[in-house]
Length: 262
Image 1 (tube, rainbow, N blue to C red):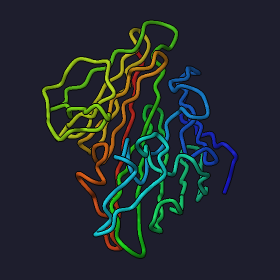
Image 2 (tube, helix red, strand yellow):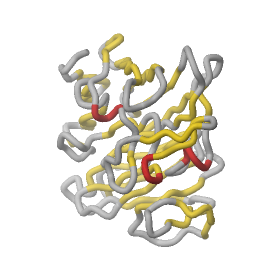
Image 3 (cartoon, rainbow, N blue to C red):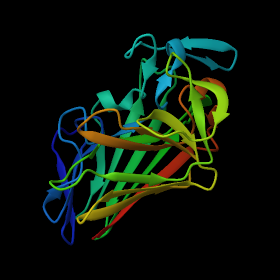
C-alpha cells in the first residue's frame, strides 16, 4: 500500500492521485486553477462495489440476503473502497494504475483496478471489478466534486436526460420514471445513449463529462460544489438492476472529462 500522493502532468494540466485516501483523484488543476473541491472527503472518489444508497444496507446475493454497515443510516452508501488505501501497480508521467482487493465487510473476494490517464485536454478514469471465485453483483461509479465557482461566475450545468428517476422519501428511486425536473438535484437520471453533461464556468472553462454508461446522479444541493456522477446502475441497483461479475466476465466502466478554455 502507499500513502504517497502521485502527481500526473500533461501540458498545463496536473492531477493529484491519492492511493492512500480511497484511490481518489484529489485534485485537477488546469493552468493552475483547481477544478475539484478540496478536502479529505472530496476530490473525485471511486464508488465500488455499489453506487449511491443501498436500501437498509442489504442486497440479495443469489438466494442470500447480505447485510452491510449503515454508513449513511438507514442506508449504506457509495461502496467500501473510498475508505481504504489502494496499491500502486505502476505510474508514469501521465498515468497511474491502482488496485484494491475487496475485503470485509464486502462478502466476496475480488480485485478492483483503476486507471487514471491524463492528456493535455482530457482526464480518463477507467475501472474494472474482477473475481476469481464466486460471482457477485456489483456497480462502478465516480463521485467528482466540481467547484461551483472558479473565481468568476458560478458554473452552469447542461445535460439532456431521457428521464429522471422518481425519488422516494427515503432518497431511493421508486421505480417510476419522470420527465426531468429543474434542480436543485440529488437525483438519478437515465441517458440511454451514454452520459454527456457539460459544466461551463462562463468566460473561463468548459468541461464535458462523458461515459458509455446510461446512468448519472447529479447532486448540486451544496453551495460549494456540483457533482456529476456516471455509474453503471441507479442507486439501490444491486437490488433493482444487478450487474453480475463472474470469473469469465469482469464489470468495466470508463468516464472521460474533456475541457477547453473559453
